[in-house]
Length: 129
Image (cartoon, rainbow, N blue to C red):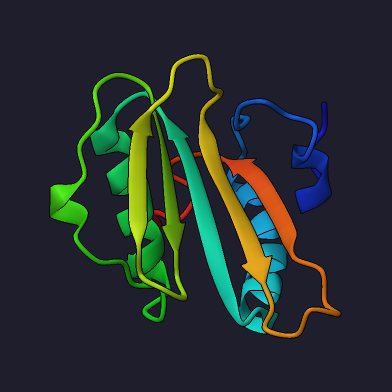
């Protein structure tokens, strides 16, 4: 399957391998959505807690307004699902087997007339330069 825009990812269970060109194009499209959102929530499916936390930290590094609390207290064994909320700064992690792998990013809005949009799964290293 060819990945040309963010919506091409919606039917995937795990993040695809992306070329540099694809990554740049998707990042440009995603950044427009992030900048227009009031806040984001992030779901990360990863093979380990360390992989999930590293992916979350890469997002915070890329976007200085996206910060989370108490990352050092997060721990889970095996495959994991991590959920972070930019608005509250809260992050939760739980063991979860059988998931795919990747980052799901949801743009949220304060006004209920604007529907949230979820993008992904993006590769775990998507936000690393």
